[in-house]
Amino acid sequence: MPRIVETIVMTMNATGEAHIAPLGLIEEGDAWVIAPFRPSRTLDNLRQVPFAVASHTDDVRVFSGCLTGRKTWPTRPAEKVTGVVLDSAVSHWELAVDGISEDDVRPRFTCRVVHTVSHRPWQGFNRAQSAVLECAVLVSRLKMLPPEKIEAELKYLEIAISKTAGPREEEAWGWLMERVEAWRGEPKLRA
Image 1 (cartoon, rainbow, N blue to C red):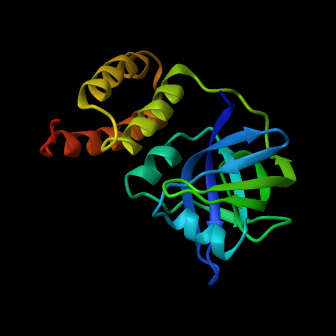
Image 2 (tube, one colour):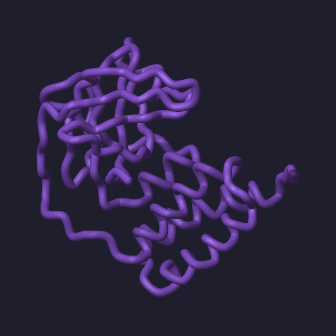
């Protein structure tokens, strides 16, 4: 299995409008692969402007916010590519697309790192922050995974939240749980 780094990917469209999305970047040798699902603004933007910025942040509210309609976060211009950097980034990579492998579900954009910046020391994630990230992945796949798997995962992740969450993690978790509660109220298709 390849290494996947969960990060915030910032892309731009041809008119200069930034888009923010939580994505897992796939390590492939010295390159990083961005594989957005069809349809998505990230996919459209990478085709229009073949650059991206991976903002590595310890504020998990950004991950959950992006999945729950809270996509306005402070940014600043990237240094070497067309794009923006999340202000809360601990570090960031500026990426240039070198190749595209087409796919009906998830085209793969192979990128090289053209610039790396460390903004402050990385303190690591506590268990609650990790639980929020895992929950964000679950929320992004609510329509793809069996309900039983989602419920079991949530039950386990809630332990870390109850034991180690600070105010930011509690807020991020709450946003994700709003989305989960809405999903719970939707009719489920059974095979």
